[in-house]
Image (cartoon, rainbow, N blue to C red; front, side, top):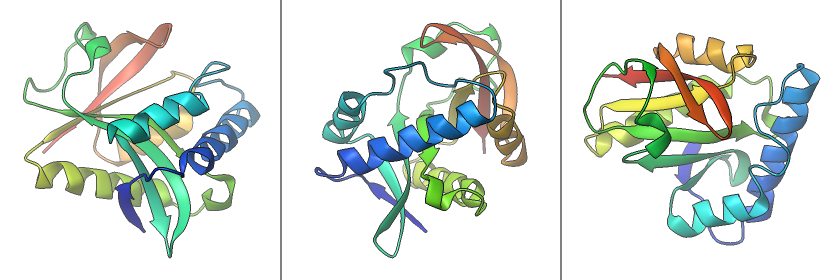
Length: 165
């Protein structure tokens, strides 16, 4: 699997993976993203801004994420404390399509994200998730992220995690 910048024209395919992830979340009994978010327009803006990335295998798109290197305003206030004050990257909207689910690709995705950041001199990565998203919380723990506290994002409280080298 590779990670690359999402290209113009891939908005719909990336949005479809988000929609499939939302359906999976609902089947698990929680809602990570409220109705209408992220929208096709959100994904299009990510791609246009150069912060939308896809995970692909043999030209087939498997997953999508938004990866921002720099400040996330919602992360400025935390009930708790971040591990580091160094420059960081933020992962938002990480989703795999239904066809890729169950293949253990999240670990590979985070390895690619970490390598991407380290190549650019970024040694810290922050992520937030819903308390009910036990799958993502398990993945973050497994991938070496530490729980740092709670933040307010996307209209509600989220659990905040950070990985640092």
